[in-house]
View (cartoon, rainbow, N blue to C red):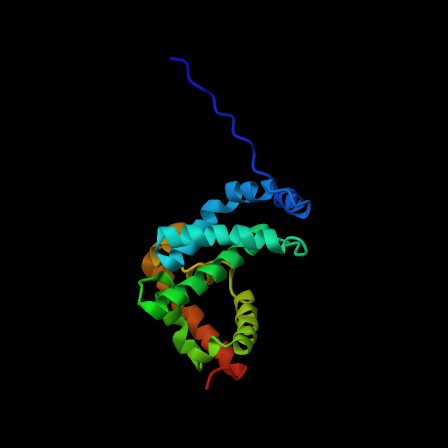
Length: 197
């Protein structure tokens, strides 16, 4: 029996994909999906724990990217798309949570950070969230690369501790030690800036 050879094209660079968006070429969506589809689905699923909702968030992300590029010209298309899908998934999560409590890595990871914040409900207000976000970004930039990976994986992408441990090739306890150090450091950092009462 003769085997069919499947020739797979190389993935386009981010710049090539952005050029497709800029020229309003709908192939941009296909190329975005080929390169980042699995990542976007994974980010949404870590938050929502629901395949169908995650796929809808993935599709909404493609639409948002199509509508925002141009004028946007992201330096990192991966980070730009991840930020979009995360925001969409969190909005959907919030809507679903109002109706009924759903299990999620996001709930667990945010509850871990709650003690660092003076008023967790205030974080949801846009002005306070923006200022707090700047402080947290500044704090994260002071961490070691490994701690940055732990923080971003746990609190931005809502990854389970087990996945982080596997990626870093350390024990779950090792991850929890990093998380504890990060939380203590963040609390002190925010206290110095008057964000903790």
